[in-house]
Amino acid sequence: MSRYKCLSCGHEFEAKKENPQSLAKPRQCGKCWGYFVVPLEEYQRCKARAEEWIATKPLGIIPLWDVIRGVFAERGLRLSPRKTLRLCEYIYHEIKREKGWKF
Image (cartoon, helix red, strand yellow):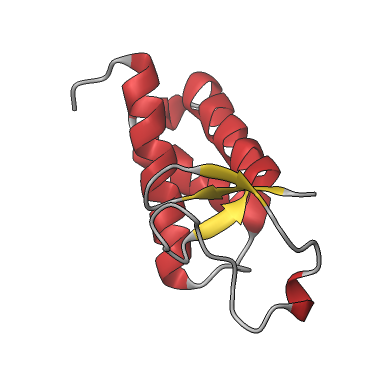
């Protein structure tokens, strides 16, 4: 089964049904009941790409821009605009917390 991450509360969970086309509604978090849910492996790829660009590119001084570029490079435009912004925000805050940045 696939693992998913909720962008509202951070809960990671395993899908009960494998095929999303068989679902009448989009995936939903079992903890907060939010619909801002992305596959965990795609989340990790987006985060890794953003961290790579923050560390290696000259614009690494603007980490939010590198996060946005990383998300669009990995995911493209498949998400709804609200979900894309939520994913960028969640990755940015997680990287900021891990690195101990205060801005």
